[in-house]
Length: 452
Figure 1 (cartoon, rainbow, N blue to C red):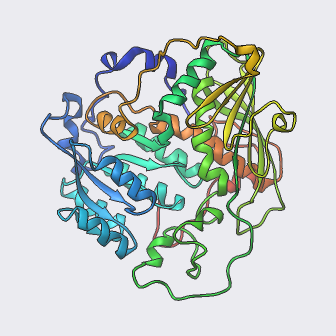
Figure 2 (figure 1 turned 60 degrees about the horizontal axis):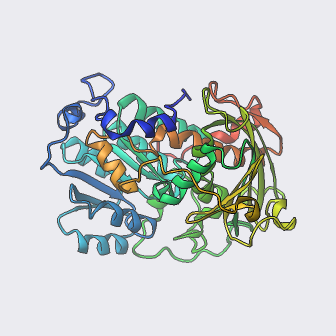
């Protein structure tokens, strides 16, 4: 993927220096129905004109995202879409003016064609992220999509390129990126508080997956459209072991704990160290199961930094991911407190341990009296507000697809390495590992009737 803007420079310019996004031009690259309201982005969104949003997936994670965007005063929720009619009815009771749909394809076709929609919030299971996002982007709609950005590397690259070509405002749902704690950790790393960073470790407890496909075939709940829920995934009987939560542990729908959690936690070193892409990836886990994801996994990356990144680490940084009962050796060595999930930066002057809401400089005695640098990264107005402001011509959201795409790609390459059983290289310009067998795991066939 082409190099992105250096994030430290971007943040330091401030909102005033980035007062607008390039407008959408009249071009054959855009469907005819896009031209109109969207062409006004370059001129600035009318102050009294609300952003009309559709929500794809309105319960569970979808409910969180709905609750994130709907209260914003400049937003109007005009459409609700869910494959479960009970979820849809509950959301519709809150937003009775919104149109209701079961199939996001019909929703986008109908409402975008009628100039009745400006953006889409995608909160489906992972295997539907890219189909919904890609269709919305092709229709000229701005997109907020839950993490990970897509289910496969091919899908990831497709949606990133679509957003870039059409100059649409995007945001991936790594909500923790907007929290003050991540900003303070980034400032500490980039100020040299722990010296040159030599390695990074990222871990979470627990693990989704393990086990064979269920053999029982209970009836599909009357409220659920199982065929629409499956979407592009291969057909299989309904089971409570997939819906509503445990789909994360099955390759057809998710990428296990790595796919579910790594975008949140690896986001921190990606940001702090200005990481670009892995140059090598290898994974260790239990024997590969063709249906279910591994309950534990260790992925070792050699991460390349962007050209011109500040001299706070080598050009290539080792980064290791762990989930299940696996942890970096620093715990056994007695160097870390008994925190749960976390990220560890190992520097020449000490250690920086962080999770979502706190951080610690270690060993504590070495940092007694340490004064952190003055905050230099502006507070976020809110993760959802960033995207809304970007749609209306403001500063691009920090987790826009140009940033979220390479992060998601690195995460998913861990799954590719695990499936291949090999240490892989990665050429981001060509989009290949150099191994035909491994490359086969970067794309999959869609079920008949579904396209990207």
